Image (cartoon, rainbow, N blue to C red; front, side, top):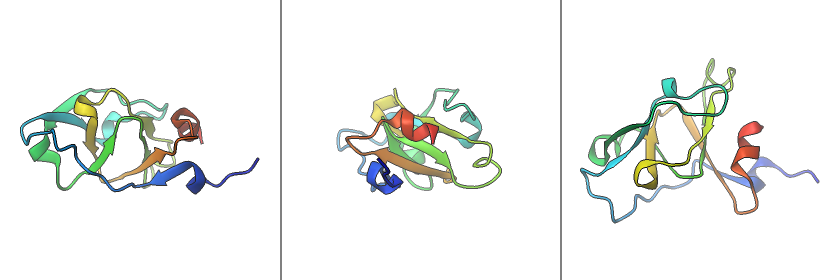
Length: 112
């Protein structure tokens, strides 16, 4: 059965930071250089929420990051992000965020 990507994911979803997080709480930070072309993010960096809340791309546990621009996109840079500090992450503005809908498997989305 054919399905369009928009039926499986929400592209660059609106982000609401959990109210329980304080400005000095640590969140995950993923620059483009830390994302492999095999679907993983390699370095577990954290930064205070207040230092990344503006000017970076937000995402949450379970999201898929996909590079927006070449050559990173052509090289297949992307990652399924899980295990984020405080379940929240921020990263390069060069990422698209794909949030799988309930019936979609993030690992399948990443493999596309």
